[in-house]
Amino acid sequence: MEYRKKCNVCGKVFCYTDQDLKNNSTARAMTAISAVGTIAAVFGGTRLDAYALDAKTDRESKKIVDYDHCPNCHSTNLTSLSDLDWIAYCKEQQQAVAAASISINSNASVESLITRIEIFLEEGAWKKAEVYCEQALDMDPTNGALYYYKLLAEQKKSTIEAAVIDNSKITEEKNFIFARKYGDSEIQKKLDHAEDVLKKARYDFLIECFKNDQTIENYQLTLEKFISIQPFEDSDMYIEKCRERIIALKAEEHQKEVTDAINELRGAYTAEAANKAWDKIVSIGTPEEVKNSEVEFKNVKESIAKKEKLAKSNVLKVLIAFFIVSILVIFVMTVIKPKIDRQNSYKIAEELSAKGDYATAIEKYELARGYSDSESKIKALSYTLAVEQYKNAQYKEAMDYASKANGYKDADSYYEKANQMYLLTEANLKFALHNYIAGYELLDQITNPTEDANEIYSFYQKYKPYAGKWIATKSEYLSNVSNKWMPYEEELPKGVAEAEFCPFMNIKTREAEFVLIWGNTNNEKDRELQGVVEGNIFSYNQKGGMQCHLTFDLETGVLVNEIDIDLWNDAKYYYSKKE
Image 1 (tube, rainbow, N blue to C red):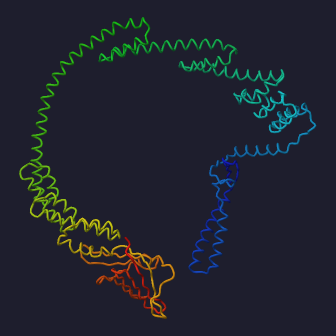
Image 2: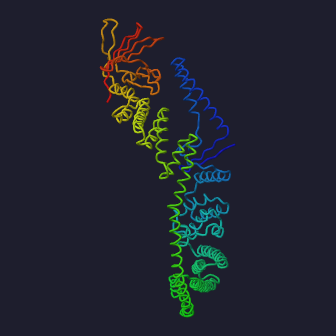
Image 3: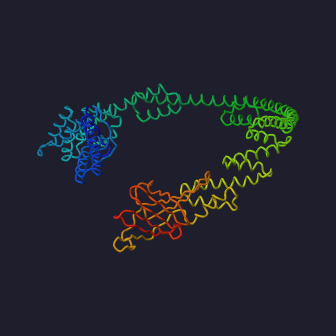
């Protein structure tokens, strides 16, 4: 199958087939295979193999054609051409080529050129006719017949009647205007005939409009169009008929507005509504219509006044009854119902407490506040749950319950202990994520650590000056020749230019862990060195493979990496704590 597309930007037309799409798929597959081969060659082959496969990948990718972009301007604004569009395009191209190859005898007279133009128009050779018209106009620019023939060629019609049928605005065309300006009597007759044909078509159309019009606006438009073609046939008669219909419709419209206003007056329930309807009748009605409505307006006003007087009397009675009922409802809702609700809530709370569902029981006791010993029951059960949640390490919940038990036994002490352990737990999460600033901001909220919190709190405070990132300032290596420390002249690799000391304590087991993130390797997991701290010295020993012993002095920032291989030099790095 063949696909044809046209660029809406530059006009380029291009085609492709199912075979082209298949070739694209093959090229994409070959490109992918070559790319995989190139990667494999980098790790397992020679550099020459990699270069060769890379070049092959490039060649295959160049075979891929993007048919969703214009090959000329690369725009994606494309239109698919149907078979009819394609035939029209081919015909235009053939005519363009034919026109470009038209050769006109420079010695030909205007009369002979006109003869050829008439033949071209009969044959439907529109482009040739246009070219000959242009040549003849260069010789005789005021020849009205040439403008007339050029008009036909542009419209692709051999007669003016056919051109008028397809173009109702042909009289506005430039060549029509020039033909009218320069044409002889014969041309003028043809143009007059064209205008008559147009008027006839408009006349027939306007008659249909007249038959179908229903509104004043439509009749007004039809009237204006009939006036524009005067004098033509019996257009004067239809102009008069349009005016008659407009007058009749306006009378009907007026009568409807007056009737609606009167009905609005009759249906008025207030004096304001009645006055509004009356004002409308006065503004749109004739003097006779207004006079006929005066009595009805007076009767409506009197009826409304009586109803309003009766309504005021009824309203007073309703207000008194409403006031009495409201007092009763308020008494029931504010005194009786709350008391019943508190009794019911207390009863349910007692049952839940007996079953051991203390959390739900507290909620019910809170609804029964002010009834019996609800307040003391809330504090007692909240204290029990505060102690239980604290033992289960649910410190946030323990704080909530201890707060409700405020003043009961040592509830305040449990609140403080739970608060400190909660802060430590949250801080520990921050330290686990290496967010030391946020972690120590939480620890700073603890001013007087309890016995349970003191061990963890003291651990993190001890290593506060050392936790976080360190920046290397210089480095040295131990010379195998002089057995002296010599300075590195090359720039430090990224993996050792920065170190991070990470102290951590497991809150449940209270076991301390120390990790130093350091090492020139792409594997981040291999950079996490888990060691021990004695004094202020972090030490790490690697066994198996490349054996090494690493120490990091937390006070001085000196890191020594001793490697148990003769070909490798021991290294020393000097770090300063990053603020």
